Length: 289
Image (cartoon, rainbow, N blue to C red; front, side, top):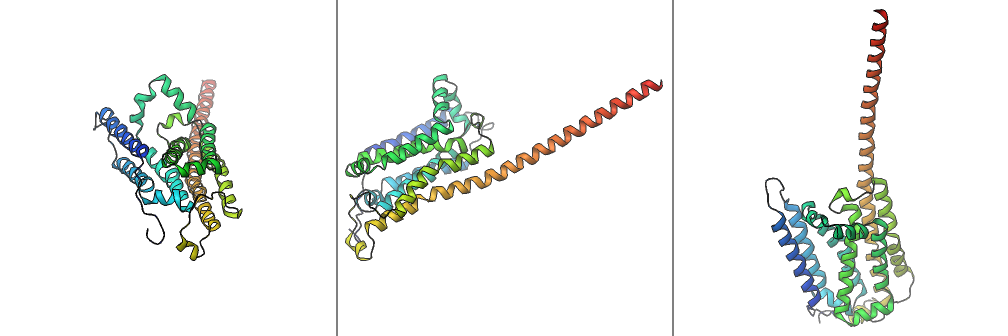
């Protein structure tokens, strides 16, 4: 114990196995699918994104931060949740090139399941329900008491947040049907349930999770259970800010799309006008002859 915090390392078998399987799938998939490097180069930023996501998952789930999050500080738990859902999931999607998934999507069964789960409404409901249900006090306190169940919770956040991000930045863009305005609306509405929960944590003043044993040193500094929950809620507001950041480039992309379409329409109208004038000129010449 240092400054009252428990720095015990917790090696979760389910998380270790999950990360190893994820690395194997990615590595073997790249090796089997990535045959012609000249025609399908793998950008280095994709590998960097994958490595960053794995290292971040190790940091938040397999270090003393996880022990603190399960036993002492709710704010540490929210740091984990935000890192997994707001950083790790997008990085994993960025790491995945289209050609890595195309063989899987060629199978009708997998393609059907994928399209069903990544429908914007379905993906949003799955993520928000998963996040909120796990934070019901009874279930959450049960997860805190058992490290394996707690890590099942964390991994479920990762899986559902992958689905949740897919309509915005997922690979296989032809399968993503949302226009830019629809993507902005999705990003705004999708974060509302979690934002409401975050505001509840910040402003309610009632401690929902009494399992935590805040170190006496922290209590001496005035860090109470209410303060811990308030700080955790403040961390949970970060994804809402990320939604605004995501909406900004979507807005400018939409404006660019409108401008490009306007130029295309202007060119088409000009061509139609020139064709009409040419046809009228031919009619006049024919009448004169």
